[in-house]
Length: 611
Ligand code: F6R
Image 1: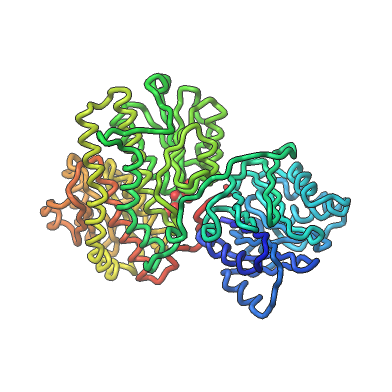
Image 2 (image 1 turned 135 degrees about the vertical axis):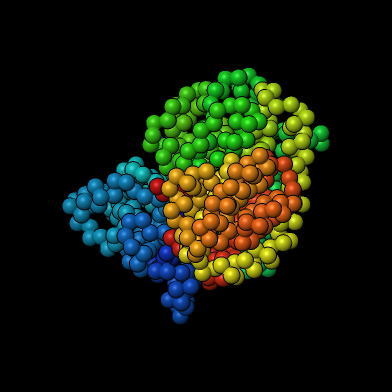
């Protein structure tokens, strides 16, 4: 979703800001713009559509500014037009603002500005309200810093914003409320951004800005102030992601690169949490036997793919640790007044750590006394910072909108956590735990084996890419894999697809099965195999195209399937980590055959920082 970049230093700001905006493209956007402090004027240029449109529009202009702000907008209030794109400027044109979030009381503020100050609004956005408030305050001879501070007190909602003012050269003032903001410490220059990816090539030390904090950046210093306007001293954080991590590295798309990175990512996640004796250690997470005795239920809350990882987490925690688990999508959980108290362990799962619904659910659970543990990829993200304990996935940056390696590493965290809790409360034996860990350790090689056979998935996609409808079915753990496989397909190929527990087919959905339908039947759970076999038979009787996904060795399935996809033999419990890989590849190749924009699918954003 919306991305903010700011630079102040001694180099031409335009190039640096546009390059930064490109790095934020993956978050999703539909217009882009920049504001530069050009001499003693604020110059704003913005364009609907891709950053390339903006670049084209300004190609003939020469800018000397060394301070500026930039923005990629994902439309919420007002259509994606040139006029609604950010930056927005104050009525007198002196101040420019970029914003990420939604100002909930913007109508009320807008009316007040119109009536009491004669402001004429130029856009349909909520953001313009910020620019106009700053403009009005500035006319009262207040500094930009004072204006930002005062403006932050009258708004409600999520409003992280950055502003420049033509009366204050070499200065960017920004404020954070509920959507991410970091400040990057450069050499003779400083930056701010929505996430670290635009900054990787310039620096490796950042400040994580907290909610309610304001930052003032000049080329030689970054000052941070708290909600009361008092200076804040905080330690910088070292960033260990490299520039290469956030580049395509020879792959046609980030998604394919990230699918192929899964053996390494899974191995990293395991390596960080297993000791030499193959025991799970949760260094940095304090979960004692006494803590556990105090917990009588676990709530796992997340959105989209992370929610699907939560479904598998439920199965694992209930099986390995014998504690009841509820899994909920965050947008429902936060409004359903959940039954939570100090005996609840709340687990938030989030790649970005910035998903607003997940963050709000976390706050809801925390306010009711729950202990909060999060499974997060982005170090220092909001979810991570507001949790009592963090279980990082260590997947490295995930750039493609469709989540792949973040999901598989979230699953690995779930295995390790469930095993750890299960041993702590003696629900499973050491022998069983060791057996599962031995299987987990084989996963990187087995995922590689699946990847080495990706050409068969590619050929399948070449035949099927123009299908209108694909169903995914499975039982037990495979039902959760089916949900994730189906989401992957629809989000990048735009094929109508949905997933259902195979046993539910007969209760309605089988009415949709016809010869043109493709059904992907996931049957990796040995004890449920006979049941899946019968479900596949039922579908075959309706002449659908059936792709069965099984462990190697199930030759009988070929008799009743049109195609078969295989994963290496493994314990049922760990099969989801392997089964999802051919499904990710299938979605990728289907979308590629259809010529879709795989890394940035339409209407989607990587980081969903609004409701
Ligand atoms: C799908 C996908 C989304 C995210 C969801 C939550 O491929 O990526 O469904 O999983 O928006 O995002 P995070 O994990 O960042 O909270």
